Each structure stands twice: as structure tokens, then as C-alpha cells.
Length: 120
Image (cartoon, rainbow, N blue to C red):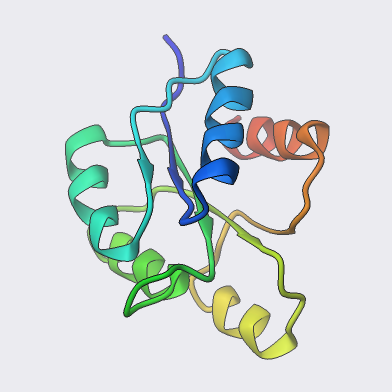
């Protein structure tokens, strides 16, 4: 059975590209959530095996705060993606104990390798 991956990405084109890449690799992607408010309902509905979460979201809370909320109800692994290599943000992200912290732009091969590593 295909593993389910939830994508949290506020940039529609990036979200669509990620979804396409993951589905071609055989993963099930039930949702591309565009803001932090949609994360919890989607996690509850879809019970993903992995969440790929952008840190900067166009919403009141960021991806790190959304990840903290997820971790309060279950231990779904989270891979953070960010285009901003900022030490203070990285330190804050690490408090959630993500499975990975990757910088954009990310190569498909690198993302696939990290996903496989996390899911095994």
C-alpha cells in the first residue's frame, strides 16, 4: 500500500510540483494544504505517514507552530522545507524534532532519498 504524504505549501506552483513528483514516485498525496489553519483538519482526515511542511506560510502562524500542534496529537514525521537559511529559524524548527530540515530549491533526488530514509 502506498504511503500517504501531506504537503503544506502556500505557493501553489511549488505545491503542485511537489505533489506531481511524489505521486510519480508512488506516494499518495491526498492534500496540498496552503495555510497553517488547514493542517490539523487534513492530518485528522488523512492520517499521513509523513508531512512535508514549508516553514514560512501566508497565515497567522508558521509551519513550525503548525508542526508543534501536530506533534501534540501524534508523532507523524515532518520534513521542513524553507528558502530562508536563517539560524534562529533553524533553531526554532529543531525544537519540534523534525525528521529533516531541507533548503529550497531542493532537487527531486534529494527529497526522494530523504523521504525514503524517513519512512523506512
